Image 1 (cartoon, rainbow, N blue to C red):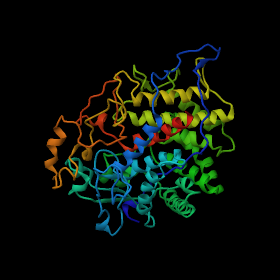
Image 2: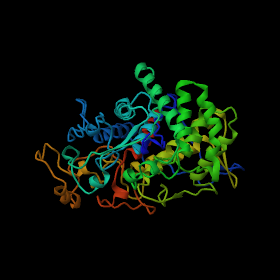
Image 3: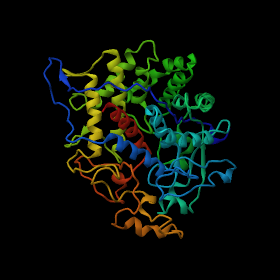
Length: 486
């Protein structure tokens, strides 16, 4: 076993939770005495959620690597990365570039596909399969998964189209990822493909569990400081086991969850975290909602604590809200938190509704399922333009949206407009230009405003202006849900 294979880190692909939609909710948070307190913000305008959803799916076309299909609608993009993996004799063509660069990072790609799988029902299968096809390739070798294609330092030192890449396409390999329950999405449409996903997830999970360790320790020289692992690996293992159980109904995986979930409760359980690194809140919501444990009180307590960590009225809320109502956590690309946590709110609201429960946050604050949905919807509406700037954070939606995003392909002229190659340093003037992007990356969600609701429309301010797949994936699920509620 080589050094990269000594330590395990899971990238999980999760499936649709169910095709049943959340009931229509309209309510406010109340105190235990029945008096309303701090009602959640209502929408100031009617948004076209189906149109926004369609734009979201277009974004994934703009992030594609590999040979583009004839169905490609963003025609300013071309084929790229057609020889990925050649230097090690492995086919790694395909997949998605994670954000504004031309590197395929497996860590965020796994999370993006996880969340996309969780919420996808009868739409977006093409976007999902583009990822799962690649991840099957990346996990084809026994005891090994390729988690990154491209040199991030070299890529970030250039500003060039993916079609012109001349930076290293080096490959990093690490132990496994569970493709787990993405099979649920394809179970009826493509049973053979679904069975392949389940089989692969079981094989790789076994290796991961037998070779535990930190992602950053095994591949630190290659993947750090980009997408470092801060939260450990236990959350991914438990989350993967939960979805393999849901996909396969094999008792071993339910027992694995029951045996190992207590490890996540240490030091408060990270109840307010769900993203490409830390999956704790996602574990609690998933396990509670699907009744994976016979005794659910402990995990429901953690899931309830997640709600109280973001609810504006909660006296135990550590998460901030901007003056305009945006859920905000310190750090770059804040909308990744807004989208992911809002998605979990909507999922958990369904569980509360089915079980007839409410969430009690202390101080007399009682939140029915409708309050969770209302908060999630208010965040979507903020992203779409109900904010102090009256600006949509989605490219191509509404009359005012970001025009100078931190994205190499969008900011450089397309092959049709500039058929000759644009080398590494030749793209810098485009990066520095104040001109709007020549190519609209329709559906891209940028990192978003700061805590004061201000947004600098600048490519250089990547913390605010860079779009990413892991920001977008939860919004696909939320917009699909809101579209069907209408």
